[in-house]
Structure formats: structure tokens, C-alpha cells
Image 1 (tube, rainbow, N blue to C red):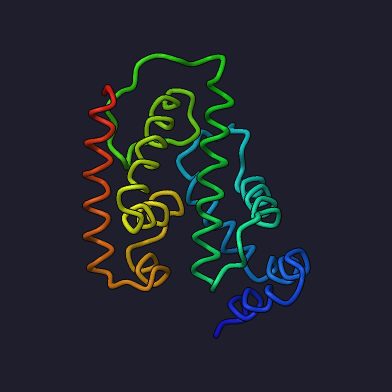
Image 2: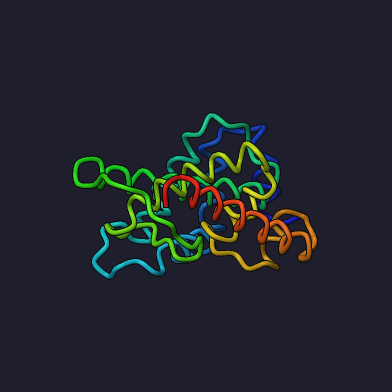
Length: 187
């Protein structure tokens, strides 16, 4: 059992804040790498930087009412989801007054989560992603880890406890499903 998993298991017996304070130094670099993966294609002057994204996600995880995480993989899935939601909220805030208009067809790998031009795409992707979560939670988890957290097939397989072949199959299905959902929503 990794040290991170031991701390997470111990959360049941101590306060969440105390456990998170012990956990942060162990996972900070990995969380920062996740944030960099999500922001790597953004414009250089973007206001949301990896450090800010990590800190915001960490605060959300700390204040979460969810039960403690089972293990390292569960924690990183929750962190990736927190980061995804932050980016979606950031896009919505930025576009609430400025943007509107028609949705456009977009390749899943082509969405830039923080550029002004892609605001409609981000919101359409979020809507489609939520529908995918309802229909196929495992495929949504693969998208969350591959697309939003930037993990490789091998890392995703390890995080989810699946074979690489299964991850590849779920990834192919999810991409096709999301492509169809985005196309049907008006692109």
C-alpha cells in the first residue's frame, strides 16, 4: 500500500483537513503535472495557471462533502474532475456576457478549454460529457483521465484497474459517442 493510500485510509479516523495537510506534499507535483496537462495548449497570457488550478482543486477537495477516497487512483480521479469543473466554470464566467451563438462541430482532441474562441465548444462538450456520464460512467471516467487529466492509456489503465485494451476500447467508444453528441447538438 502506498503512503498516499495509507493517508487516505487514515482519513476515516482523523479530520479531513489534517489528512489533506499530510497528503498535499506527497501529491502536489503530480497534481501540478495534471494541471499542466490540462492547460498545456492554452494561450501564454491565460489568467488560469497550473498552480492556481491545483490550489483551487485542492480547496474543493478539502471542502468536499464526499466520503474519503478509497485509494490513490480514486483521489486522482476526484482531482481531475475538480480541475475539469473549474475549467468549465472559468469558461462559463468568461462567456456569460461576451459570448453566445451557435455550437460548432469539433474534434474531441481539438477543444482548447480556455480560449475565447472555443467557449461554445467547451460548454457543448461539458453538456455531452454529462450525458455520457449518465449512459456509461466507465467510458466517462476514461475521458476524464485521458482528456481532462492528460494521462496516457497505460496510466489510465493503472488508475482504473483495467487492462490497456479495455481503456483503448472505452476511449474509442467515448470519442465516437461524444463526436456524435456534439454533431447532433448543432454543429
